[in-house]
Length: 200
Image (cartoon, rainbow, N blue to C red):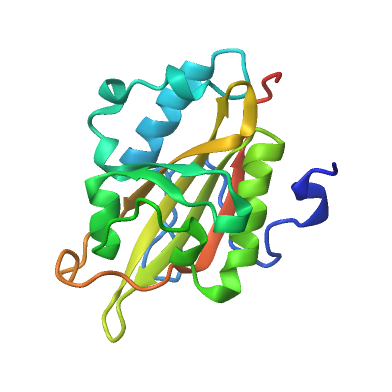
């Protein structure tokens, strides 16, 4: 099977920002990366995998990431069902003002962006690569909220096409958050793999 990344690359023309970059200026259509949630979750995942490309699902200890647990989620790698949420933390649910468990991850995205997100998820599994995505969501008639999503491969019985660990981080909660759910996530600013050159 040919890796998804060789079939479909992230959409050209995106303002991609490497994970190692710390800040881009806000207010000019740009996006702040490396928020605390994504930094902590990535650092934990990176320590957990050691010399492997991805840790086993059973290696993950929720207590070790209790500070960001409410922002995290786990996806089933099931393309036919749109990569449904197995579990999702309270703050992740609060962004959309609904229980995400069981819902397709792709359903959270604008129709025009779902193909790209599908491709990213395949890269996460096919190449056992972590990805950072910068995007925005809004409620109709209200201001947008900048969202940073991280997607991290997990092995389940040795396979990477089973589970994906992820997290949502927001730069600043708008006044409407918690009262109205965000609409579809749209216009990704960045879909970038986080490479550290480890062996599988």
